[in-house]
Image (cartoon, rainbow, N blue to C red; front, side):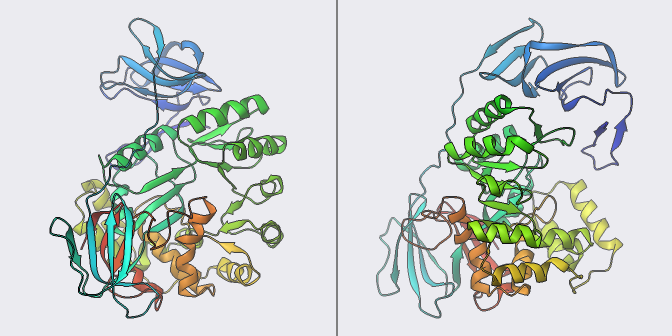
Length: 481
């Protein structure tokens, strides 16, 4: 209903009551506060300001059609998405031009690396030698007297346990780039972003895959689609099938490989799912109804008994995000306060104001090692025993990035899954659901070299997933303790 400013200093947010409540996705120049860009429907506007208040009438940018604006550093140009693709608007000249644009997401090949004296999770005490090359697992062999060639680096794991890098099937990365290292620090090498700004996801994906910045592999939905007035900062309201097709084309061009449906959508569900499946996207809904009845393959969060029956009948999956309920009840930040404290003390990537905020919140409440009552745990257990496929996702949006997935795995075990089944929900099962089962989620030759090195076997005790020694992504060591 109104615009809200959130200071990066960590100070309290405040409402901008004098601004029009129909302005969405406001972009500010980094060098001044004398103008903004904002969206209204499918149109992009510029508004001049004086002392935080609008001056004069807003002006359309270019031909008026566009969204997802971002100013250049000097505030003189505006990047945005037009109907035919990315455009750049020169504010001085008042003209816009199309920008040539192509996705790369190229992962540079990694140097050969041999992991010696390694145990593979769930396979007992047998020792292996694992060879990594060109970002993949090149080979696995029983440990013997074979020595790596002189030009190949070797890491002796001294009997430590290797499992696949973890996949969080439901996150929201948002604009806070320092979260990226927290995911890696806790062994989460792939995340599925179920709703964030698509340009931010695109930029982070390019940076992470190229190695310019350390971070997890991102499979993302970009905008969440909805209808009517229920919209948020990354919701895309659609009015008809023509808008739905336009939306799908733009999202796909920006690298989105997930369609996230939010209610209410009515008659638009069927064409959206059809268009998404034509492009091979992973289709999921905030609720099973009506998304799954039209062909979606999953539902987010714990569903009702009727919706669980529907998911099971069509062979779809559910990502229960049990830890989200715990978070609402004040549990996630405090149960492992020692782990959070160690993370922010040890890390060099959290900004000072964020660290101080976490310390303050921890000190305000005595850490509680006992989980709160969570009525959904039993329901998830019943759904699992009835044959429903369950994926591990957290809805992580803050300081628990990465860490929350380990708590989610504990909750799945509380629900009755064996450690091996909970781990599959965070590795191979999610990879299969995303259509990536041939390259992610297992320690096998030919698969991506995303590996988590642990001090103890989590297939024996799920809590051992937090006993992290090293994290490898695409054949490179990205975190080590």
